[in-house]
Amino acid sequence: MTNFPPITRIVTGHSKDGRSILTEVGKLPTVVEVAAIPGTVFHEVWSTAESPARVANDEDPTLGPLVLPPPQGGTRIRFVDIPPDTEDFLKSGAKQMSEAFEQIGDKAASTVKESSPHPLMHRTESIDYGIVIEGEMTLVLDDGEALLKPGSVVIQRGTNHAWANRSGKMCRMLFVLVSGTYDPAVAASLAKQ
Image 1 (cartoon, rainbow, N blue to C red):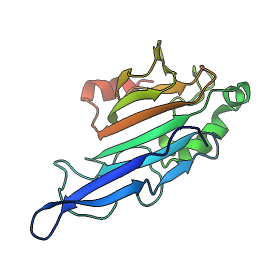
Image 2 (cartoon, helix red, strand yellow):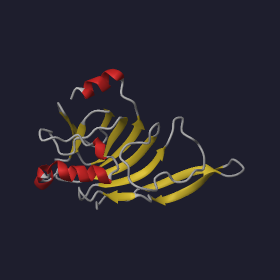
Image 3 (cartoon, rainbow, N blue to C red):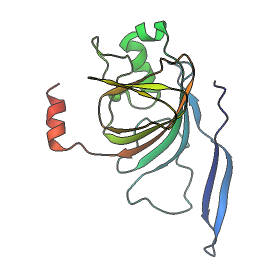
């Protein structure tokens, strides 16, 4: 695991007479280390299953298996702790990455090929906001890279990408994922690949 502090989640709700109340204050119930990528830890914060989101005192939506994309028509928020890339990891190939994506509930998201610039190349049909909280990360695209530092925000619009940690230290990022649908022109261009 990491040296980062645990995440405290505060959930609010409504009493029977309509007053605002705290329904939960504490540690996240779903924190999962990805076995195929030791040191990578998903901290599930919350998700919604529709838009507009249902405002109610519903059950905790983070309980259950880990799933990478947001629910169709919904959202997902999570922290991810990402260890530095190692030579073994970079050489591990598609098989190990296929196992990693299977564990995070979306094997089809992996787009890695022999010629991919990083073994974790993937794509989801969503708009994702990725914010570096601590550490450094490199966003890897098919064509181009960007170095991210604390406070950097990436708006990921369903593009093929990977997160490369070349800093030698752990990185913590916050992700907010919003379900999306590819524009027909974008979908046609992806079909040609």
